[in-house]
Image 1 (cartoon, helix red, strand yellow):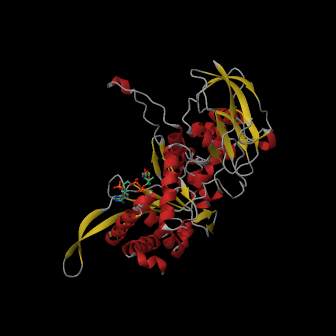
Image 2: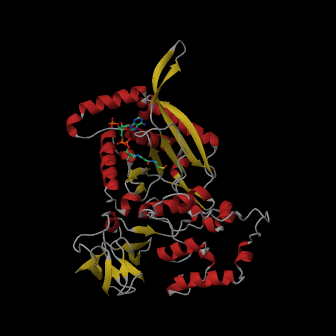
Image 3: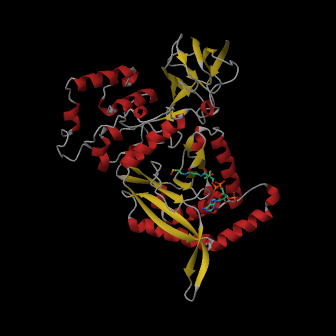
Length: 446
Ligand code: CAO
């Protein structure tokens, strides 16, 4: 058994942050990746996970302390092979960044839906979501672990009175709220929800999740979801429930572009940079976003915030689950630079080495399953973005050119959009324009 120092990992852009919560105490047994403390900057709060499993010997920080990368959080008697971190290397370099959902995520139109427990997933995390640049406003003041706890119980945090420092909501406040509801407290009235089957249109009145003892029917094995899956699942759930999604499918004729791609890769063989279709699509999307700026925007209450920058997120499939690295300033980069950035970010994603800064700030996302297969799908929008483009595997099809059928390479594109912001006609125009650009890449210069 060896004593190891557990330090604050790379926390991205945050230089000094305050410790606002101690999640463990001396004597506690912790697992690798378990959260130890919560720190908070003016923009977001983060839980700092343990790089090792073991028993907490001594805390080296107290509430209110300022810490930065490298600060010692605690001394741990490490279990097993003491020197080596048990956790996947992802944990220290990518702490969970949690922040109150920006107001954009809950405009008035969905207030009723948002007041349902299922839609109360209010702690976006770095894995998928931007750290909000807008001030938190009237959003509840609570740490990620309290938010998680409230989420598990279906407690609406904005109705809980915080008794902690500066009105911060504590675990105890959430428990007390739950008790008061169990005892017939005011929540049902406060939420205006009708009794089951009452048909007020406010509640979802869903049946409870089926509880099945699967082992009764055959052999089973139970495995915890990965940390990334848990985090991205909560975000996907919120986005799916709160955003009225519509998906518009279209095709792009990429016959000529594919020939250019193959040619480029031949010419650049020695450089080691491989160009995939995704790089061309990112560049074309930037041009389409410039032409249709509503897709490069976010909802903020009753207003739209138009972004003048072009940071494009792309879904990356990793052994631990889905993450969305963000390729910054795609408008200022050429195809080769974009390809290089894509390769670097994808590798970091697979190795669990993305920093929070590399996963935040996106304006529009692309989910490409083109390297795998399938034909059209409905990607879920990455809030607070308002649209996401899904790409499937290109295929050859006979296309009538006015005189005869010609074999053309076709890229299936699926644009999911937030119907509160984007009308069907606009989405169709966006896709058609994108198709034109991909069909004749020279148009991108126009
Ligand atoms: N049609 C046909 N082939 C395609 C293609 C397409 N649309 N897109 C890529 N390919 C090919 C590439 O050219 C490459 O071919 P070679 O091996 O012959 O060179 C191969 O497929 C693999 O490409 P890639 O996946 O390595 O590279 P990429 O730039 O296309 O994608 C990345 C990078 C990170 C997006 C991808 O690896 C990935 O993780 N995709 C999964 C995303 C995902 O899970 N989305 C679902 C999220 S839920 O909405």
